[in-house]
Image 1 (cartoon, rainbow over the protein chains, first blue to last red):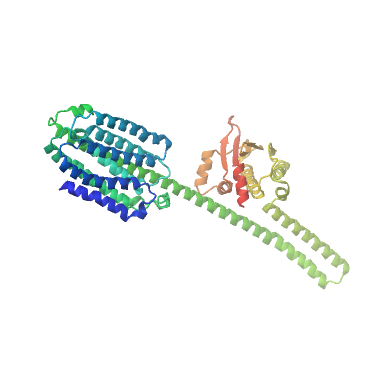
Image 2: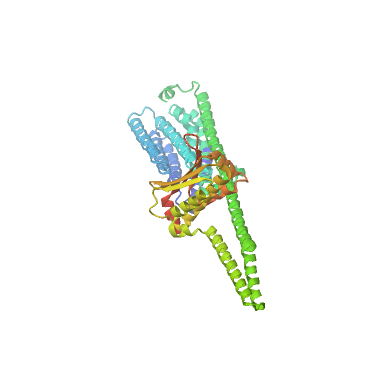
Length: 220
Length: 281
């Protein structure tokens, strides 16, 4: 039931982006939209594959993780304005692809690619922290919470930090355990897509509105 | 991570999983809340700074308006109290000419009227010179300052000297006037409050910076006093100095000399800034 709701929220984020297309133009969120579309397609394909080759979903999950990581890493790379912080996703990506290649050739499970997924979650948490730190130290940004990217990063941060332990243990789950523990993923998937929807529906954060002159301390 | 993966399924897995997830979630939410509150704090601080700056601007503007009004009143008083009666008297003498047919009396009254008109011309010239010193207009800041200091020295109450080390190119006329008014105000303050026996002014440049320094051996103020007076409702002249320098994007520093004997006032201007302002005007 929860997985169906989660799937609906995935579709909803795509719909929200398209509905508020004007607001999301030139905001650097295209990559997140592509990720949402990819998630919907992967969900549909995953169900089909699961029905046909239920026993071996390792490569499917591994590919999904690679694509997911690539989308987010690109998003963070383009969001980091400082040249000094831009090297972080580059180094992280090299490490990640190294680990993925290793698990591809040395697979020891037929189920979930736990190592790559956990590595992805850890890297995403690091990128999110770096992003948020750069936002609060940037003098140009008056209200971080008024920017679309802030909510996308919050969604990513919450999702990956909450599912980190789940991904760590997922490889060793029995189908019964998978069923009972995967609720965590579904719940935070819903939360992530809700925050994406909020971000897509937000008005463009223009400089005038983001200035100190329009600040109302009672806003929060 | 690998160690965690090696944990056998079932052995406290659910406990670690749930506590780990809750812990991570709590940390994440805590961090996000911290960021939002930190931002709020920063914004409030900046807002307070901006308000303080606005108050300061308001004070400066009020000071400048008050000073302008005082200047107008002074000119009005000069014209009304001095020039008005003088011209009225001259008119009386000339009127007398119309009714008095005695030639000697006529000549005497014409002479008196001429004397009074000469006095009036001198008076108006003085008013005009106080508005825009002709030396400044025709010969520049250096000559105007030298002239001012010579007059002060000539009075015998104080020894005043000035030296311009690097003033080959004149500044924009409007900016020269602003600097001259600032120097006048500072000298005025020294004469009124410091009880100094000498004032020495030096001018020099360093790169794109233009400096004017005033030394005196009387009672003076430091930067802290200046800032305090600027924020209070007193110290109209100092606020006026500040608002004039603001036009030139200049700075002023009040300090005691290294030897702790003299007070030093430094006016710092950026030459490029001065050129740009001139171009805009």
